[in-house]
Length: 102
Image 1 (cartoon, rainbow, N blue to C red):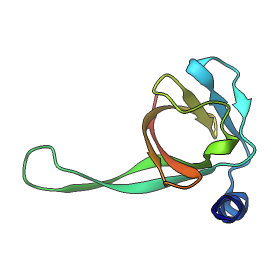
Image 2: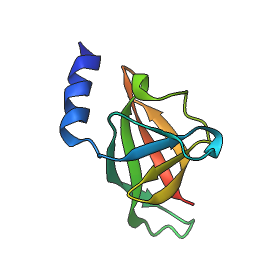
Image 3: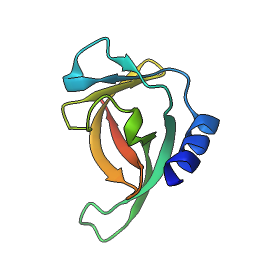
């Protein structure tokens, strides 16, 4: 049931053209559904003064990916290439993939 509900949310907010590049190899495969967004992060560069920022993220159903995400994989969204910085599974069927511009 969780996978179906996640599927509805992902379909509703899905980005039309997201390509997954396994091991960074072009041209990659199109993901049928993925939500591209910005997530709030708090960075403390050891100054004891928190700095707020945002970082690009990709919300996906793990079953839609061609492979388990690794740091070698790349994602192309809106013409921009990103590397995978972190994968945060939701514990059920999806994950939030934290991206970094290449």
